Length: 141
Image 1 (cartoon, rainbow, N blue to C red):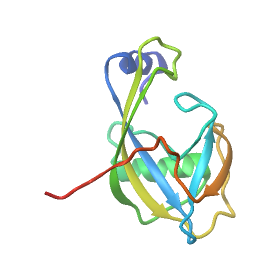
Image 2 (image 1 turned 30 degrees about the horizontal axis):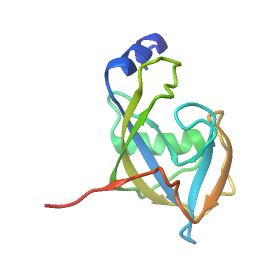
Image 3 (image 1 turned 180 degrees about the horizontal axis):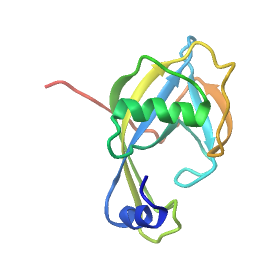
Image 4 (image 1 turned 60 degrees about the vertical axis):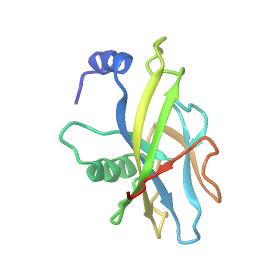
């Protein structure tokens, strides 16, 4: 994994590749977590985070859902992408934070084992995704 100070410097000059995961239940509701860190600190959001070098997007999705919610997933489908431009840099830098997320969707049948990591304070299922989560759908030419 990249050392903290080096990653901090990278965010000053490059967008960060991430995955976001729209986790749904059998009722069609969306799993949202309340974020601890910037960007989107204190807001309800979907599970997600950066992709590591030598990690596929699919591996990153499974890792993030496991790390953030202790849920194992099997079937995922890419649905689009989302870009985050934020003045609230997670490192407290004055340069804006820019992340590009490939967005996936998955369904979970059982959330009994759901356990949050220290990146979130609460979770809920909601009928709507956050209004600012402007996913651009993939289109086939």
